[in-house]
Structures are given as C-alpha cells and as structure tokens.
Image (cartoon, rainbow, N blue to C red; front, side, top):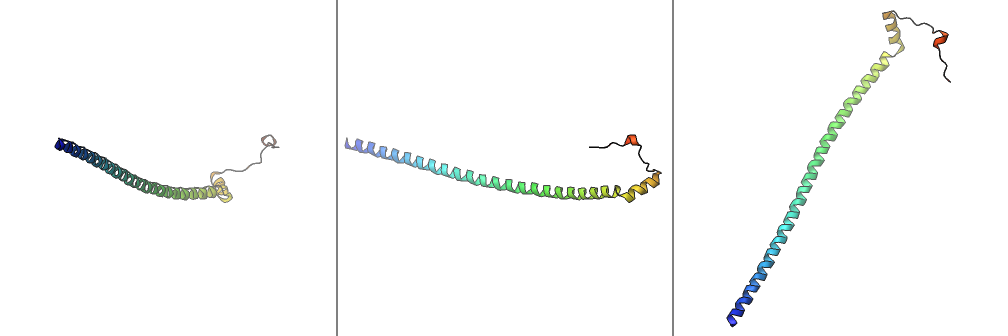
Length: 109
C-alpha cells in the first residue's frame, strides 16, 4: 500500500513538472515569436524608408527638369513678346499698326 501511494505521488510530481515544462516551453516560443515579429517589423520599416528615399530622389530630379523647362519657356515668351521681335515680325508679314476708332475704345471705371 505504501508503495502504491508513493507511486501516485511520484506520477503527480512528474505530471506537475511536465506541465511546468510545457508551460515554460510555450512561454519561450511565444517570446521568440514576438522577437521575430519585432525584427521583421523593423526590417519592413527600413525597406519602406529606402523606397521612400528613392521616390523622393526621383521627384527631386523631375522637379529640377521641370524648373529647367519652365526657365526655357519663360525665356522664349520674353523673347517672342519683346518689342524688337514684334516689330521685326510685323515688318516681315506686312502688318501695320493703326489707331483704333472711337467706338473701339472702352473706358473702364
């Protein structure tokens, strides 16, 4: 009888140790999983940061080229609307300026 009680007590202790061991293993796996997810999140943020840097670089290059185009077009507008160019084109195409009639003039208040 004493032997039976000691066997039960032994198996209960083994079961308790086994449960503790599984609980400890589960906690360890859970902590490891959290650490892995944290590292993956950091890597993802770094990749997004690099991609954003590439997009910003492309946008700056496009902005620079658009500024150059704007500068060239502004120069062209200035050149084409200058008095000398207008007079030269008027002479070339035979256009003369005439005084407007009184009914063509509107006074703004």
